[in-house]
Length: 373
Image 1 (cartoon, helix red, strand yellow):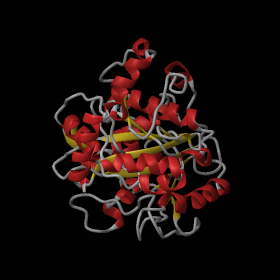
Image 2 (cartoon, rainbow, N blue to C red):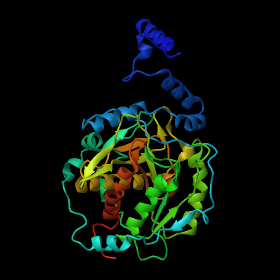
Image 3 (cartoon, one colour):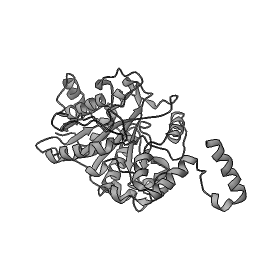
Image 4 (cartoon, helix red, strand yellow):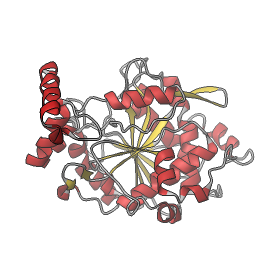
């Protein structure tokens, strides 16, 4: 089928070139998705999330080799089908101090937790073209411009939290609870849910940020409607816990089997992470009216400030912020983050090691560089 389309397309280019002019040659699947999005945006939203990640794999290979690329890529965002849900009461827990809490608290008192290893030129960040080239990757399904991604406005937003509240401040959950790693044993403890436990423990025990870790599973029978399944449960959790000011949807990415998203931090093999934003807009149809996000600017500010903090505290730890066309339930909270930790090719040790620098980056932004509890 693909071969026949390619031959037909080459013939069409030769005979009627005006109809084939485009900056990047489309595959048959790309063309069908574009037509589907015009004819039925809802269907395009459901099925468009099942795209292969060829571009993302290419990007990850280049990143792994230390090369720069401006090519857009597909993020790992599928809306899983028939996801199993769990009630907010039975599937949520406050992260309590763990056995290593004393060690973590001792470490928290040992000097400055936020020693910068590099400096990002703030003046250059105000140049939109520089910002896009160095800190972002934009998926082919969407677009953005300097009026929406205004660095001076995004960097000026105050993202600090108030810890003087009765209840959790950060909610951690997993739209794709079944995501695991190359050596995972099939247990929740060695999946992204285990990472959520570790991240929550660090934020709470080291930085004094109360955490609620929600253990709902929305993709057990498939991923096609996982985001739709998760939305009412997360909405209810936020209603039940008005003290929550930050929401983290913790994932891992999916890449080619020969790709390793790993770096070295303080002598430890550490999986790279990626901050992700959905823009509720597709290239083909423009704004998606049924997926509005009134918190988009705050979402963008959160990922950008996290990315800049990461670049200064742990150079090379994060991949570029990925922008894609849909919403991914990020409308539920101004300080909402979707974070991809490594990929299926990483070991659990590598992704577990990533929780320390990730927690440090998150706390740095949310606490404004102040450790006092």
